[in-house]
Length: 378
Image 1 (cartoon, rainbow, N blue to C red):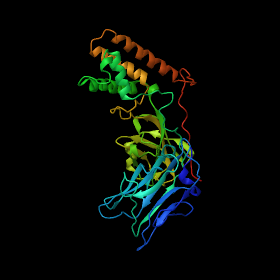
Image 2 (image 1 turned 60 degrees about the vertical axis):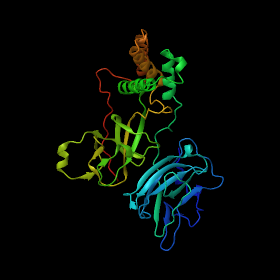
Image 3 (image 1 turned 60 degrees about the horizontal axis):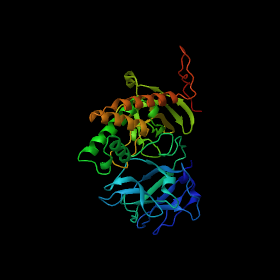
Image 4 (image 1 turned 90 degrees about the vertical axis):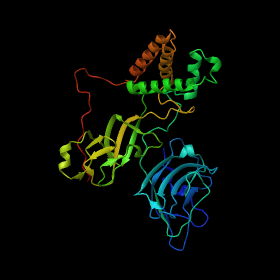
């Protein structure tokens, strides 16, 4: 898994009207009045195609907000000139605060994808050129510890449409499966959505677990759950955390405790983070003394949207289907509802038992790994 943005020789700068430059650490666009140039970079001819897990990861900052009332975006554009990702860096002529992190899937973007700045998050043909514009794009070298998001794996998911169609057939409505009676599609969708929430909440073996990372900023104690620097839009479920700690870049990983004692607020201190707490957002304590540390959390992904026909289930499709089928059959008074209820309980028990893998448990012993001493920077 490589951050292709961190390979400057891979990129060329041939945007009409002027070009950014690589200064050894950043891609930089600096133009003074009356000059007006455009920010844009795209792979050199013959550059190797991205591999699974490759990303475009970095931070962007600008001191120029654009024309009054106009917003600016950093755009990831495919070779076919389709906008794949858009990061808003100013709004209505007003600057966004500080550097903005982004991490885009280079493999999904495909060969020939390029990065431009534009005024429209859906239009890849407009490139603003303003005098006095400054923009800095800094590649991020932090390693990803997650696999690429992929529907093909040990968790076999399915779409809402396919699961609804299966329910129609098993309930005895095969002839109407492609055109459900009024209100029936919404009813079956509700059974499926409810079953997914129940199984996700009850059985840990069905959850999706990932690493989430937040760059810690000097003096900042609060971080948005959705602001992690993941490779996609997956977000941490704050109720399902397995491990939390901090690292200095990719080095010096150390666990931190859950819970910030209210008595800690009596002292206004800064240092290396040793505790965290999840409420409306993530609070760390004490406030970081510098911006060299990363907050690392291993936890479950919250359920993804499951409302449109093409939305895929976030958990295994078969126990989800069986749970919804049991509830639907009970609703329609069909006598075999209990059969499917027993099947889903057996399947989820087996999945839970299989999830233990090679773990060892010592009866009466302390199975919790010891907490390592807090590292000291030298």
